Image (cartoon, rainbow, N blue to C red; front, side, top):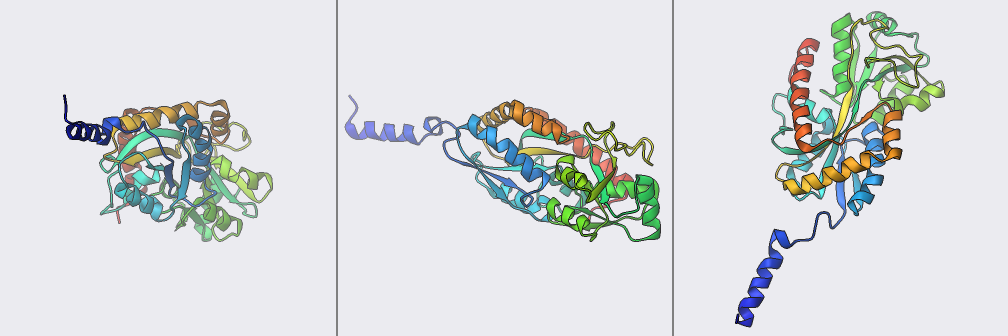
Length: 320
């Protein structure tokens, strides 16, 4: 028979072991978003959070940490405890940082654990103030050669920044880049004619278009946008053959997060993304739902970094 003191010690050891801990998740999860409230990432993340809470059985606390093209939020994630209770919902900009910075603060494939690709955006709407004389990409290019035309993005290396420089490189346009801390600020800037051009997902600008405050001159996807068939593609509107798949949203965890925890969150996220209401919302906003495995997301990231590095070379964007 075991002595009482030895038995108690063994029980204490079992209770302290990870295998004896409660199933994940057993408390609220903090999801950081590197953008102020109101932008595309913010609205998409909040839309995902609603059905995801039901799948997880725990609350999700949205934490907006904007600035520096996602670097602030990325550094916070890298320092967070790798336990699955601090995650980052972000866009392609997070990966772009290591391509446009000479000394990036992190490596997206080494310092983070990819969890799932939440959605992809097949194209951007190219938007101008309704008072602008430009009614096509060709008009916009010519206008930039005779007057100062500014376009906004959420920071150097952002997918919007890259698109602007690709248009400049392909057409000889002279549009000037202006960085902001979030998409909501960019929209306000173009509404106030502080800048003249914005590249946005349909869901973030459609209300302003319908109200007559903004005008869509083209769409960068391979085909015209469903629901906005009157807006031509960029290829139809002045840059033959050009297609620009705008961006993607993904969820990341700290690098050392246990794989079972990552797989559990990914499985619940995939179920949430398949719910009819969220799937319809994502599709109507111009995006395509994701939800794939961590390994699939990692492979996607490798290809994305290779392709984007080539686009940066063509656009003449060098690390700074």
